[in-house]
Every structure is written in C-alpha cells, then in structure tokens.
Amino acid sequence: MASDNQRSKCCFDEWLKAQEQQLNELLEAQNRKENDTASASNSSSENIYAQLAEKSINSFQEYIDKRNRLSRQDVSGFFSPSWNSALENSMLWIAGCRPSIYIRLTYALCGSEVESQLPDIIRHGLVTRGNLAKISPNQLRKINDLHLKTIKEEERLSNELASLQENIADQPIATIAKMMSGVGEPSGEIDRALDQHETALANIMQEADKLRLSTLKELLGILTPVQGVDILAAGKKLHLCIHQWCKTRDQKHGRN
Image (cartoon, rainbow, N blue to C red):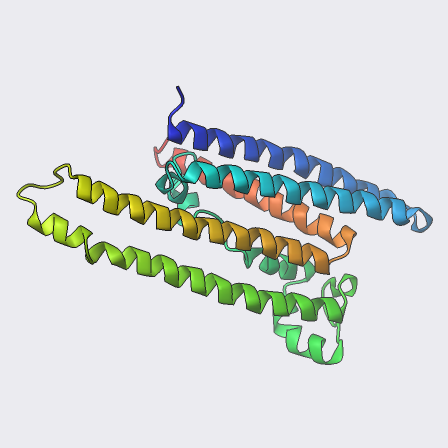
C-alpha cells in the first residue's frame, strides 16, 4: 500500500507530466500564430488559444483539489517535498509559488522597463520601450490593480503562517515539552496539539492555492487569448526549467 508521501509524489509527478504536455501544445500554438498571415488571424484561432488557456486552468484546479485532499493526511510533505531539490524548496511560498510571480512574469515578457514606466503608462498611455504595444494601457492598469490586491493577500497569508509558527512556543506544546521527564516522549496530548497545527497548516495552504488559481484566472481574463498563451507557455517553461536546474545542482552537491 502506498504511503502518504508516495501518493503526494505521484500527484506531483502527474502534474509535472501534464505541464510538459500542455507546454508542447502551447508552443505549437505559438508557432502556428507566428506562421499565420494577417488574414489567417481570425476568431477560429482566438478560440483555439482560449481553449488552451481553459485547459490549463482546469488542469491546475484538478491538481489543487487533489493535493489539498492529500494534505489532510500529510501536509508537512507539501511544505518541504522530497520530490523537489533543496534549492527549489527554498524558493517555495506556502507550498508553492507566489501568486504575484504570474504578474511579474507578465511584466518581464512585456519588457524589462515596464514597472518603471507604469505610472506614465497608466496616466498617459505612453508606450516607449519593449513590446508593450501588444498590451494596452487599460490592460496594464488592470494588471497593476491585480498586482496590488495579490500582494496584499500574500502578506495576509504570510502573517497567518508566521503566527502559526510562533504558536509552537505557546500553549499547549511548549508546556507539554517542559513537563516531560524525557525528550520526545510519546503523548496523546501532544499528538492532538500537532494534529491541530497540521490542520491549520493545511487550511493556509488551501487558501494560498486558491489565491494562486484566482490570480492566474484574473490575469488571463485581462489578457487576450493570444497573450494568455504566451504567459502560460512562459510560466510552464520557467517552472519546468527551474525544477530541472535545481535538480542538477543537487546532484552536483551530492544530494540525490
């Protein structure tokens, strides 16, 4: 019978394979777009891009639902997963990526000067550098609003996690540890306290996952289907590359 960790790893491996498959589909769509003539860019092409974006969102939703069910058995495994490298785990925010990274990636794809230009772009609609002509000032205004809202939610969840971590030094865990005659003695009381801690941890992870999904959905709602394909392809490629780069570095340091 598979252990909790094995089931969680299997969930991640399936997700990784889905990312690779979807990346290939997105790259194929990008290639078709580049080869299309102006007359070929019609509503049919837009529908294909929209369907690819919807497929990515649905796949993400399925992954989140599955791992949130698994987290009720072993949530700590998702905060420091054995299937990731040590370096990749150091990049995690509440068992995943920061939702705001989607927006930072959008800015990066539009041109490295986007954030420094945002006040002028939003105020005057000025487009001076990079590939910003593909994103309108109105879109950038909405993306900026989403960025601010997302950062606020990230801060709230980070504070909740910090409070939960600080609770380890409070009642009842600290008192139980102090009263024990030995170190790490089994205790039904401590098991119940740690169960409560893990439940709270799983709840925070679930909220973080909801924020990741809602941020991506809202961002894709602001972008055109073609722009959405570009962002999704770049995001999936970044994720897969970082996973492999960090794995290679682990092997270099003798961590297999």
